[in-house]
Image 1 (cartoon, rainbow, N blue to C red):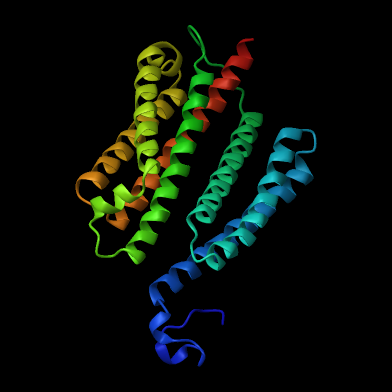
Image 2 (cartoon, rainbow, N blue to C red):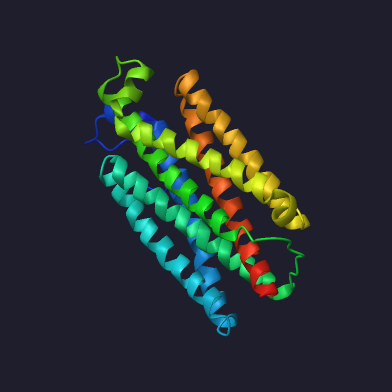
Length: 267
């Protein structure tokens, strides 16, 4: 079928209707449909890079790498379903997706730099290294968070009589690591923008916007994280928490690439 069933009568005769979830089927259908369009767009990007960016090797190779990864991601997505939503497989699936997004951010940003020369008056030390460290920590935090969410979904099915607090206790050290990493990322955010904010991050209009938006996204993500522990674990807040963390990661990466170019201009 090209479209999932909309009624029990449309199910195959050998399928137990009580085991079929129409909501999940349509979510998976939309997910795969969007994945197909994204995959086609990335493939076109790689083809255009091969055609027009042969002199710019990093843009060329990064575009091709993104296309290869999205092809692998399509196959790996089928393994997520086949594994009955195994937490580790879901985590790998999300990690690859974030890696693809990171590669595409690089391609878009470096291509834009070919059109416009960026010269930023930097005072003091360039904080690019610590911003990169923040990006990597947020990426690691997302990976642990995804592992937590996957295990919580499994606990909902296997231990539905337990409270949400008991589910969190059953996560063991995974939950503690996620919290400790969150504290570390928070402290680093405070340090970076206290230490470098005035001179290195707010001297340029673009970098100022990136700095402010990364702070907004991070603060919102932190508040949602607190809400998850205080008012329970509603699925909507879990998704919002992950979405905001991804926005933090992407904003930090754009800021890092711009700071890196700034440093290169002045060397």
